[in-house]
Image (cartoon, rainbow, N blue to C red; front, side):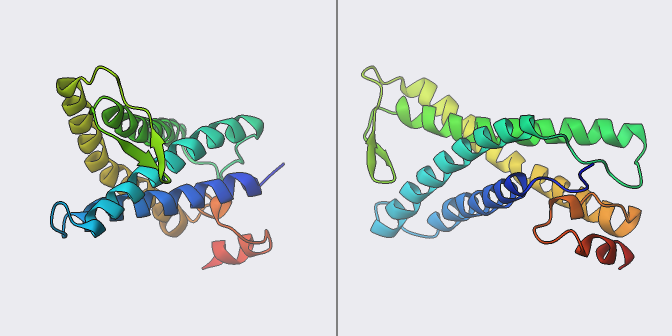
Length: 186
């Protein structure tokens, strides 16, 4: 029986994490530059490309997750914690699939040219600016909620590691299986 997630799951988890951090950072940093400036435009286009990568990799993660059994947490947590973890993971997956999808749809209905990786993306022939604004607002609201969700996910992993002293965090850390026992003793 596996004690850790598969290498593919671990790589995808941490790659998505890095891409999400960069996607958030590009939007936060973008706001420090003047509208219409080249750097602001570059950060915006980078954000679109990163968001597309997050969407693609989250879909890959769903596929990979279906291929492997989730490794058990040792020692076994109470049932309510397993239920809460399952709900939280479902929300994380839903969040980071819906968030970039809403961003893409917002651009599609915006009535202007836009690109991903400097490749021109199709826009709607009949722009719907009220819908575009609603999609953009929902995208922004979900992005703000994402900060809390990421914080909750991180807190739970650290709480399991340092307070419960179980293998929840260790199951997703990159590296060799030999570290597992030494990390639990810390």
